[in-house]
Length: 498
Image (cartoon, rainbow, N blue to C red; front, top):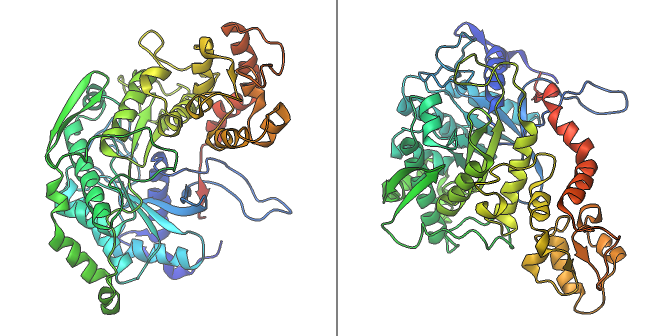
């Protein structure tokens, strides 16, 4: 990559490049976007390389991969969260971007086609209000002075005033507030400066404002995820004044009402739009939506002893009651010494993280509920199996399923059958009989599915319907993939700008 020298002028003792190296590296533990997580040197016959920190990947609704500059506004922080590398008690290099400095950096990278958007987070400098104000200043400069119309994802700071959260929502495409940990007990133990109420209250207000904005545009209040996603249906939008509880592992954080503080800020929305858009745009009724890409959150996995059941119950509640676009899971990387945390030699639970992402997919797109996938007697997934296979081998009484007659919802529960292949099966069997060759062409993964289906009354192979037998075979099939996932932390780095 090539840079102009003016991009790295010395500013307050550090060059912009030095600040970027510090603050992009500090942002790599936030996984609200999908990091490349790979280290590759330049290779003859190939274009580009992949090392160190800086650029992460997100994916658009149309499947496009979008490169984002993932960076912190500052890694100074007044909080002392035990799991965080930027905790105030850690002796690490510190840096802070000036708003215009960060904007120039984003624009210069964007012009060179290094990035397509910005992911902006921050430590808490002075207090939440001051930090959020500085982040909003960055967003406003990008949208107005630099007329940047690209994708922006901003991490909201819990405890910031409602008017700043509202401003950020009208300037950014997506907002997120990190839940951090699945239960309030764990949060109070590892992050004594934070609590569930200061996280869930603004999360609920952002949800309500997104819903009001969508309704005003004639859309459904709830965010679209998929044409088949008809399973999660929360009640948050049914009444104007509602009361519900956020349940996590047996603890509750009560939230009452609360969607009006932000969504009633019509004057602020009009002010932002007036500043953002030229006169010709306003005349044509062009207005920025409030967080059109929705809201997300993140939980750290493996730093505390919660079971998979507790985590996915919390996840299900967040989807149903806060209409989140995504819940992200971050495998805890042992970076700090503390008696409340796993030892520095503890393995990074990457395979567990992977299984939780797969379970998350089952909750959102396959019609499963958290208490179906796991139970109090079996509160954790078998990490050697994907959660759908794990569920199927524990419910062999429902199998094998005859693909010629099974309803769509049951087809979705067969390992190796996804939404597309299930729809193809339902459509095709109206006109002809299926066979295993046809199922394979439809996208059914017979390597997994053949244990659980019959086609025209016959199984693909003669297989005993025995849990231990099928589990052993499926584990053998997954062994190579599981090993690669468990060992990818050896190259746990991101794409580099340098």
